[in-house]
Length: 159
Length: 159
DNA sequence: GCCCTTATCTTCAGTAGGTCAAGATATTGA
DNA sequence: TCAATATCTTGACCTACTGAAGATAAGGGC
Image (cartoon, rainbow over all chains, first blue to last red; front, side, top):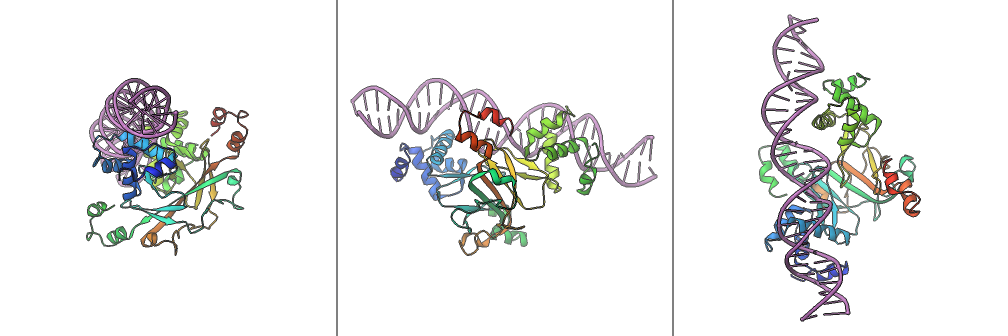
């Protein structure tokens, strides 16, 4: 496991270090983690790891194209290794669970925002469309429809 | 001007106060402002206005359906009065200028994220699609293509 | 117009989620 | 093995924002 991510890191021109491997492993196990969750996970095998290192590693991974960062409104930044494909995210308003959704529009979707509709965006050179769908996951929908059967506290543990 | 927003506020069940009117005026003049910009603008005619009041007013306006809040990754929350229609935002990576774009897909767009494509999101009840297009505005594109002609400092003043 | 209720604002702390800088340490090419 | 330098640790600092307590002001009833 120590060198599980060696090739990935080297390919991005990054040195291979223990913190980086641990962050990558944590991200592979739990996509859509925030820096704090990653830190906690990594510290299980490397207790001295500093929070600052995790921020630095994440920045390096994103810069190297290994990880992707996104930021649902009102929450800390989340990271994932699934990169390069064009997928979006679905966030549960209640338990904050995030799931990936492929973009139905194709590989380079929504990149034509205002064609013919509004002139405001006509001058923009768009290179990325960031889409977050908000709603309720099946679990929380059931909980909301039948309050009392499932407690929000019990559920939020799973997210 | 003091009562310019009276009806709007009352219709939302909110009391009419000077801070609220000032925040609304600031937002009408400069859509896509953050709390700090609104505070600065409002303080020009009401120097004692507290930052906390602005946060409270903005929360009340959003809660009352008068304002909309959105949060481009890496930036403070932005507010606008254009509400109820389904429009999205285009953000310049360089100068952070934001422009509105109507949703080309219709009035309730992208609300069918993964139909038939991925099964992950099938259980979600989506109620909102938040779309942010990232790119370069015309001004910054020109600046990037002809560096030196326009300084980033000079340009960022206009954003 | 005055008074009462209570929504709202001011002030003061406190928090989350980071960034920045300096020096110690580890990685890697030679 | 060694030197150069990328990376990590430590610790200060920052922004954007929330929470609470008390002062103030809006608005309905008289």
